[in-house]
Amino acid sequence: MQSLQQVAALRALVAEWRGQNLSVGLVPTMGSLHDGHRSLVKAAKARFDRVIVTIFVNPTQFSPGEDFDDYPRVIAADKAMLVEDGADAVFLPTIDDLYPRGVERTTLITISDLTNELCGAHRDGHFDGAMTAVNKLLNITRPDAVFLGEKDFQQLFMMKQMVSELMMSVEVIGVPTYREDDGLAMSSRNKYLTETERDKAKALFETLSEIEQALKNGSNEFSQLEQQGLRKLQELGFIPDYIEVRRQRDMLGAQAADKELVVLGAAKLGKTRLIDNIQLSR
Ligand code: AMP
Image (tube, rainbow, N blue to C red; front, side, top):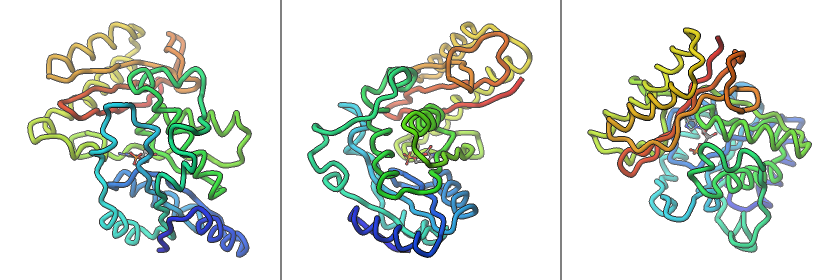
């Protein structure tokens, strides 16, 4: 596995591969890799000749007061996993490499409607930062496909929107959420949980699963289900940001006639912000 930091070096490597007619998949991450990330790498390896994994804790997607400084950075362990999983290159740019004029003065990508909804309503500037960083990585690597986790459903949806609306020629491939045995979605931030919190954390998935079940049983009481879910989490000591039922196709609020739905939730448990979602058909 090649390890690269410079934008020019990565471009040259991709050009070399393209000269050999090799296909390329991209897996963008912020590192502190777990089995969820690894399932993305494996999915990319299964479909493409070469796989690039990027590790970049992107400052523009953290709001003021969030965990940018504390975010776990364990590059040596990450690299060992990537070698095991057969990644061909890891790209580890610095902030200056990706934001040459600085993070305060940069071109940003905004998806006008969704940027301030759901997670965007609670994380100022988060999606503009995430869209911008992935856009940069796509422009550097020009892959055939980019692999993203369904765990970040809104991000995945917005990334598909960006690629379509900016007429970019890359396939966006979503990979199912990888979970712990008790249902908790794997996340680099789970490292922040205390032992007691870790035990409680499964309640987010359980709450979303209960709503999923009610929807599958035919309930259209979306608002009532959302309120019940919020109350349950509050009683357990979470500070919920939102629980919402939306439709998969356009992420607008669910209507009674909708069959393909997604239940999304985000809540803080102590200092850890957890998010999850369940897609369902009925
Ligand atoms: P992150 O490092 O948290 O920015 O995540 C990098 C990529 O991995 C994103 O596309 C995430 O959606 C994806 N990802 C994170 N956790 C999981 C998980 N538990 N299952 C599947 N994909 C995940």
